[in-house]
Image (tube, rainbow, N blue to C red; front, side, top):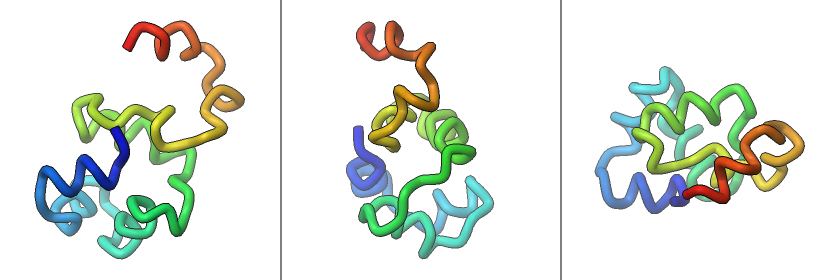
Length: 76
């Protein structure tokens, strides 16, 4: 699931930003695709969304970053 879809269905970007400890405009930039989600935030977002938004949904280059997840992604 894309971050934008998750946030659309679950309300406030402000509340989600507070959960992550980042400014709300930054979450909006990530969700809109204006800025890439930093690698160090991907696992945090995956955890904060209870796995609904996976790190491979956040980064097109996920396989280069987390090659060990290739098998796991196939098991969605």
